[in-house]
Length: 420
Image 1: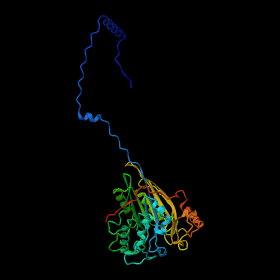
Image 2 (image 1 turned 60 degrees about the vertical axis):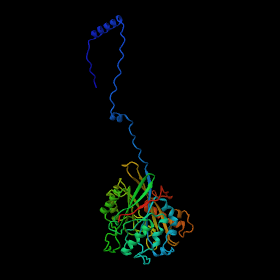
Image 3 (image 1 turned 30 degrees about the horizontal axis):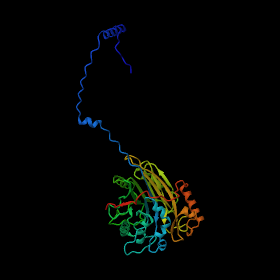
Image 4 (image 1 turned 45 degrees about the vertical axis):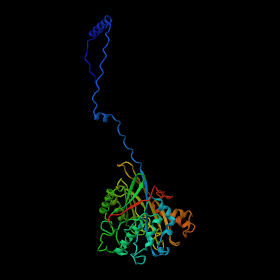
């Protein structure tokens, strides 16, 4: 910016300066008067407040990372029950328990209902499991299960009520069925205390059908069916209630097919586009299917595991498909930022397990079995290696394969009772 100054003729400046010097030489300078102390300006309270040290901005809490595990169908065929004293699955699930116990929140797919009081356990086509099955799941590391499946109505309305009562008594969360019209569609919330923070996970579930069995006249809302707008609405309500992450477990697909069908792909895209779901865990097809990452989730990402296969069952290559005795333990790693407006980030891994149908239906980690770490199993290391190789081909490689169990990041989750 240009600066403009008044112009003074140079001869006049010189004359004035000479006169000043002459006068200073002729007259001594008078002593300068002592200046009066300036009056202090009045101080107002607002001035004091303005001049104080500003309050530092609080440091946001550190990010929190948790792990959510999911395995497929708990499918209690009669031979599975015959491998237990009374339906207690503890010994059958023990070889894989370090994996399920190692995650912060473990969710299973409870394929079949519990028999009502006075009923007898049964297998296909109308399943009914004894009380000891549900009661034994927490000892294997499980925190909650879905109850929406094509077999949800195998024991009728009383089977739904009995199953939910038993899960509640065992301390397990449930999603996908309900004893009231309010409870049925509502998300199951789990709270994980991590330091001074509480991380909340919401679990939803739905099924494509109930094998043609009609919904109870007195409870037509009792089993949640696939309805994208309604599922998105429940997810939105869960987030409004404080959920940091929402997972959906869904029964869909073509049985014994290792690749997702067109309906699965269309539904996955539609669900992801709602922006409400961090992950979708699929089951029902009884074989593993690939994992993919779709755009459109709450932070631009929705993980989709199209099929997790069976967790425990009597299905084998002889009856069904080569990979029917193989399942996936899927783990969603979730990082919740400290900043209120920060984005939740997610990653997914898988670990294979297999059921030893000829060896008491024990469930083993497949890679460890292939390495010869379970010599008592009837599945040889060679056969385990072949199953693992076939699975890796289905999964499109092993880049997402996890080879060691996780370690919990804090105390066990708290199951928040669903509204009734």
